[in-house]
Length: 171
Image 1 (tube, rainbow, N blue to C red):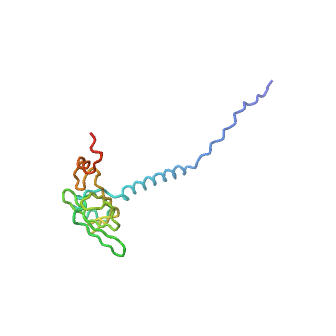
Image 2 (cartoon, one colour):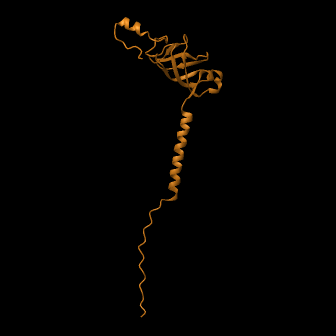
Image 3 (tube, helix red, strand yellow):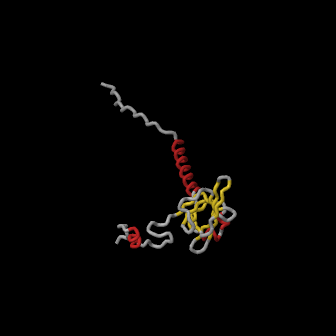
């Protein structure tokens, strides 16, 4: 008896998962790479370089038309202000402990704590004329634990003057 045996049934074929076209991975990779490149370019060229006054004063031509940030003391006797057409312009100089000096032009209203002899942080573009055309001016306030000349507060004199239990230095 020659019985023909039926072939063993095969399990049904699983449907293949949908494959994304090969170009999608490349496109995503390019987008990520471009995003990283943009962040790096903005971080390195869009910000301002923090420099000492000595570096700027020693080679001003090196910094022409570059955005800079410098820190120094507002030089006593250097402030002059004019107002033309309703626009304020203040010129002053920043100096450091070594005597380096950089002229500043600030075309906005001065911040309230502005005072010669105080420390200032100035951001702006260094011009061909050898000065900083400031776009941002931050003046540090003297510490509340110091007098305006920088000496420590005499808490005993303060207490006697105001006859109060004012806080003094804590041990």
